[in-house]
Length: 274
Image 1 (cartoon, rainbow, N blue to C red):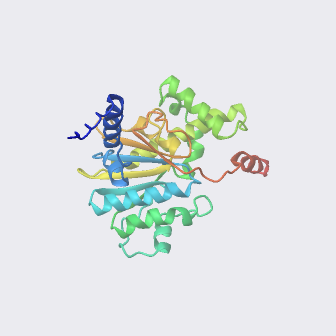
Image 2 (image 1 turned 60 degrees about the vertical axis):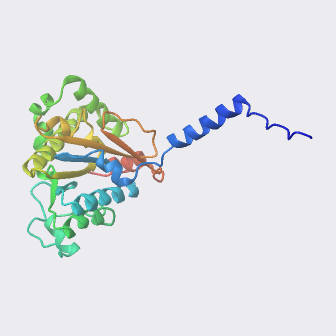
């Protein structure tokens, strides 16, 4: 009687490949959700969100952060660089109109397009959460430019980095004699934002600051002016650049923003009389 041929044993190499494939498949996980990424920054007293002003995706993320924290009843306030300190929506009802909100914040649409930032602001208002102007009032900027005490607000190395950031941010077009005064304004603005945040603290809740990424830089910006007993986390929204922490607690990359020649715009501005 003919015997049934025995099954050939699996080649050892093939077995290893299968095992590795299964193992690696188990290691590959879906990217974290928005809520999971946000949770990694919590709990905190203050969440600093640094954006690129012309990246629409950043304002959308900011709105989602506000809505998420408000839904959890964890949002104490929304502070914004786009309005001056001393302005707020605290006396307005959740049903306030956009016109009422803009008036309360003395909003400058020319400087900060409401079309971009209105949804972020109104998300807080609709949730019954106050929106606070946090920026240094324009009326105080001239005094800040001449305030030499501001030169001692940062360590020497950080001060040099801040001056370089001012120089680069103005495309190398500022006269050397203006670098110092403009750096003082930046420091005064950071300090004013920090003061606004500290005064608005609510135990067990989070204040969110929306500002340009330069203001939230841990080594140079608002974090340098916050008390050591305040829990603060920093998030940089980065439009298409490589994901480098830069000292931030988290960097969330977004699609590259449309190309725009900011230096050309600045040249035209500097050519205008006054």
